[in-house]
Length: 277
Image (cartoon, rainbow, N blue to C red):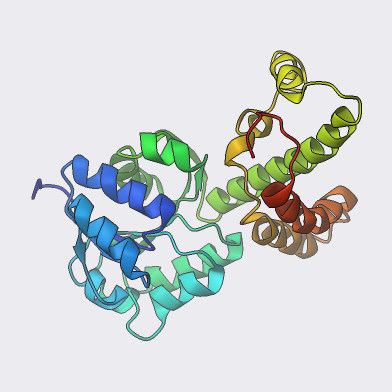
């Protein structure tokens, strides 16, 4: 461990969070984790991290804390709730929100953190678990330039690409639009696959051809990774943004409904674009 580096906290050491922990430890950072799942904690400790029992106790020892919990209310709870993180952090510390949440959630959190001299880095991540394992994630940053530069140093341990999109909230805007386009494409791949299957064509051969044509997409390339696990949550965030803006977006609304069935199809009987389930 390099004592000259910031002490990193990770709250939410699930599939993506564990990959972050692994790369951070490898890069010489001291890392502490909090997770409600004992198996996740054990895995993080095996990578070389230490364990804290609450977000508050983690905040007492860390300068830079990455949030990887699943939902908006969980972000607010671990930061602002009983035994929450914010009250324990020293002024100048950073809370990096890598959870996918609504833009107004991270903006409201930033206002409350700033009152205590703490900064928020809006830092959702893109690309799947295989990219996380290889340290090749994409981070979409929103925040003050100085906070972003501190974030780049930390996130470069597990991200091959970082894009600063603007102020706090803009990172989550970028993630929401990314996810909207992902699920538009993924629903299209289910329907296109069903049409193609009805003709008896080999979908794997067709996929190879499409990947050289205008139908090429990341969704098609990464079909094996697509699980629709978070699709409805993603589309609920987009729907909230749509309502707040007073926009009528019928395709977006349809995709929000279609991903519900898409999750079942992908788990049970998806088009065999790659020959795998």
